Image (cartoon, rainbow, N blue to C red; front, side, top):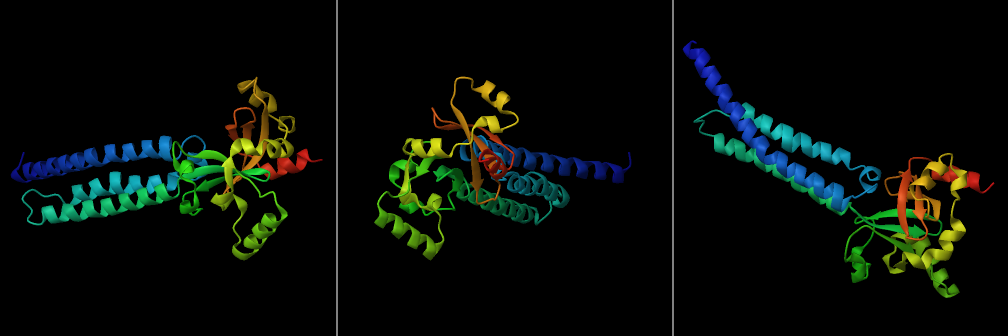
Length: 253
């Protein structure tokens, strides 16, 4: 092996080692973030419906691929500016990481709100959390709740005027939030029977003893789905990727 070959081999070994060390630090941090997002911030169907993957893909590209790759490119043993160069790379990664975390946290689902005849995913950025009762923020989120309309004519009129003024629908008004069992009558009145679904037998077989019904499920992301809801346990048992409004329209005929 010539001196040049030996020097090149040594340089590649140094660069590869720097790449592996950098990736070895960032990859576990990224995996930890994904686990928090998948199982705490965006559990169950929320992960898919709220389109989390693009941001995670961006963070993976910057923090797990680009950062270590740049370290591989700029690494050179005894390089005078090496510490500065790596510091810049780490700062860029850190900025991207903080940005991604802040967006994901702000956009996390806080509530699944039943409003009039459908469910709406309400995220931290959709409402003024300062208007929430403290007990609604305690415990595990997202919570399934009811946006209960006022009963008095005067309050209903005030709500209509407020809507005409600010355009905020009932599902985004925390002052209307009540426990989901207060929507029992409304849920039964607005339910879409499973017999209107082509795969109703398979759905019912998963929860044979449950009283199930279907409802439209929407969010600010404009991803409308059909939610299969357990009327006894007040929980979503399945979310179907079908047009809920077509199903609702068909069931009314």
